[in-house]
Image (cartoon, rainbow, N blue to C red; front, side, top):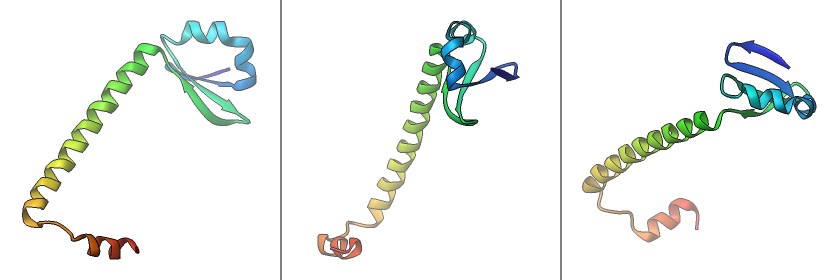
Length: 93
């Protein structure tokens, strides 16, 4: 187990088996990067931190999708539609 800064610990998957109690106790303060053969394979974070990240991700996705919808709505006013035959030709059918 290696603490690389005040908020991140790196631990190998094999070492994790023996350090579970210590890792779980430290999750409030640190995120844990799991490695296998010295390559990152996962991250463990406190559940509250995870839910914050999920809410932020969903809010950002909503903003992006809303922006795309506005662009499409503005564009659809200019361009009526693409006929089915033209669309089939464009996708190679």
